[in-house]
Length: 84
Image (tube, rainbow, N blue to C red; front, side, top):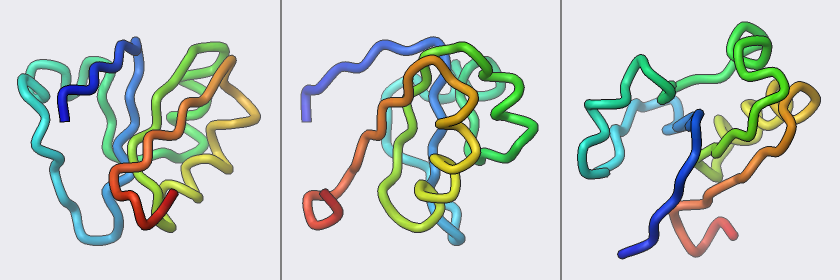
């Protein structure tokens, strides 16, 4: 879509059926600032940081619950218009 996002940490909440998003050079950041899940462990690792959460479904909602109280700022990036 030509939209650019800069973040030190990105969480991709792809749902119960793992769907890797089609993002150029994503593999270069996997394990180094890009995660595919969010739990209390990741929330502690991201504490005080600015985080982008890519999702919009139930998994993203659960990630928000873990991350929002711990991070400095949480950006929720919704990938489909029908979930806005």
